[in-house]
Length: 240
Length: 240
DNA sequence: CGGGAAATATAACCGAAGTTAATGCGACGA
DNA sequence: TCGTCGCATTAACTTCGGTTATATTTCCCG
Image (cartoon, rainbow over all chains, first blue to last red; front, side):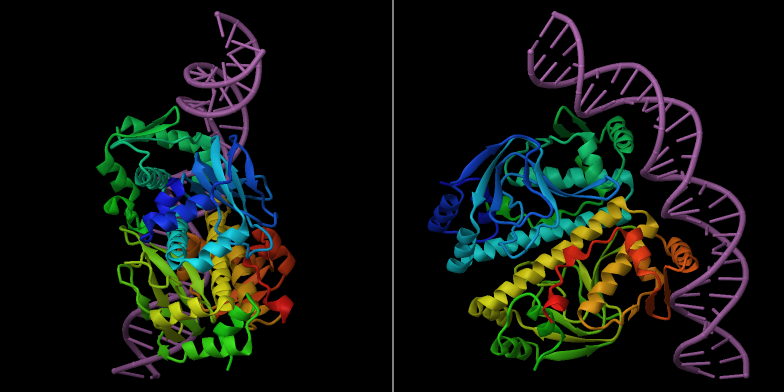
């Protein structure tokens, strides 16, 4: 009865079989959506909460000049936005990057879950805190890291997150991001992303091609990124 | 019985007099701390939750190379970090910028508040969401805005937040940040911050001196910043 | 299998912000 | 009252990453 979502939450609080069943049941309403499908648009009034069960999505904000800044990547098991119906209006948009399976939890059900089971509340809180930690790490990257460091850091983040949900081998994982998407995420131009990627490839640090990330020299990569995975608070692996 | 904290939360959920009294009582334990006092250091295991009742603080992360990135400013009424004791280890530090009055809420009391009163829980959630919105806005700034735009945007944010808690006049507010602190916040060098500030002053947009921000041309400032205050979800003024 | 769009790759040039360094100016304590 | 320390200011030079433009490759999809 478990799925990517219950797996993730189980890493954040000790959930009983009943809790897991409850959560799994809550996301029984699953939709298959194609790549490039908007789940939420800025300005929408949020109703259901979305949970990624399979595939990638990202949250982003457009600027008046047409630029786009990606704010976060959502992987299987992640909440898309855990607002719990408190906002009048979404302040950003969410779109799928690959074809995806998305569970739709009506807000009432979310609220019921939070009220009823303190374990689940706890797991939601924790999830929220981790997401916030990721946002903070992005701010640090954008503010103080060079282009190469930023990209290396994002690769570390995504690789570890993929590993935490069992979707990475020891040196490799799927990474279905074009250089344009990457550029929108790290606040660089696609041209410069290409230059940096070339550098990392030539220096035998990592390779990114045909939708997959291959880490050749993990130590060097983490060194360049100044990566400290602590902020991901990833208990999953240790528990499992 | 109200204070800066209960005022802020009242803007997020309808709190009864009893709720307010409960919250005010929860932060009866107030400490006066000097400027530059560390409330939380990265790596600490968090115990109590801190609430700013007066003065300014900021959260930041140090980089291996000695650089510093400020992640958020905390104003009167703000939670310093609403982790509710869920983390093993803080992933960033929090330090006062001015002399401040800080309330210390033991984690047990926080948990009790959350469990007991759904209004209060709701207000905490909302507060959390606003903070997250601020983080996202910072990412957009760092990723996609020029130096001038970034500084203009931060000034807009801080002015509006000060206004929301009744600490700004129609064109002015206290802003006790040195150019060095500002630089650490917007991800620029102090030298460049100075250049930009000079430009804004010469163009009669705004002035920043002796700890105060004076907005001369608010329309132009918001224009430069591409500021849309929506993300602050500031219901306070409208309700009051 | 072949044509077309999207994604990647490269090059030449430009400009915003970083670096380094020197100077000015208060505020505060001795 | 003076000296000092931190902050603000300014200048000269450098560099990282942006811009624009043009291949080239990949990968769909008929």
